[in-house]
Image 1 (cartoon, rainbow, N blue to C red):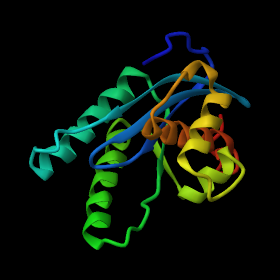
Image 2: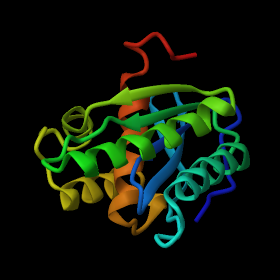
Image 3: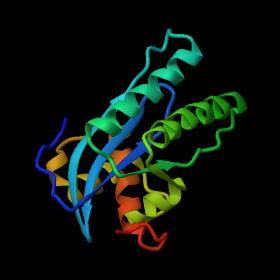
Length: 171
């Protein structure tokens, strides 16, 4: 899903919610304090493919998204540490592939903790997925209905847009 009307002086931010099964992505335009939805979706590698091929699929698909939407910056959610060390390690691999895609395209890549993203978008650091999706729809009404993974990715992009000034990244 994409919006072709893009403000000319806006920075395009790619938000990413890493996952090995489903990686959410969302692109917004940021012009000053104004945010506009550009596109969102989910990359879902074939679960039957070998592990390395799934990681490669993530990296290549996200690199294509960076180019297709002329992204200027990227932001990624930090790893959520799971009780299962094997799952956490696999998520770490997926996150690495997700971070390499925009880096390969020459984009700076910022990282944000899950609780910071929730607090920045919802106002509470322990918000649930439905609250995040609700606020994303309010902040980016042109996005329409979004899946949980894409809503999380758009929330990462919104967080980056709002916090990038403090990081010295604003144009």
